[in-house]
Image (cartoon, rainbow, N blue to C red):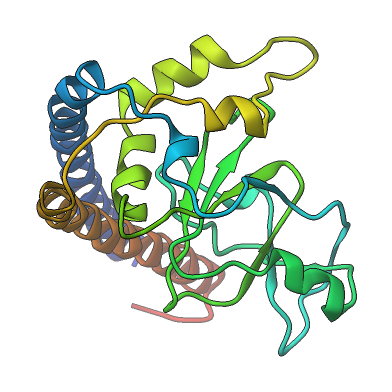
Length: 240
């Protein structure tokens, strides 16, 4: 029975490893595509972020987190955003503000969040209408683009590139914590491309990100399955 348990758990580990290797390969490929695409378009561009926004860059809510209640929006903090721009689905929290106040921080389709301080400064999240209702915290900045001039997905993909990360490293003020304010983000140089070129690149790059996301979800589910099986089999609640 011990041998059978080991074979089951080993099989799950092997599948997880295969998926993780595919994720690494896709990450490498995507990184190369982003660098190749944005490098030339940044070198030949004098465009700044403030030129393509439709609203002033906004600071998030200065409020505490609280238990997430049904019918209320989720409160997004820097720690809720992963390095690849996806949201961490664990430990979702609500915001300790009345609705007439948190409405000012409710995310809309195409809003981009940028982390302005801390060790993970520069992290980004792109909000889509299909996602849950979200409000954002004070260490994040909301960027609302003129979407007829600049696609949010195109800017989001740029924030996943090494070029953007190099700019973050060069621009952030050091002290107790690195920091980049709204004015500095507004002056950030961004790549220039026509709308048709943006749309074509978005389709290609986002397809790779979706493939990564599918594999990441499979890995998360396999890890949960392994944990559940391990607990049941090793405790004797289930036999093989």
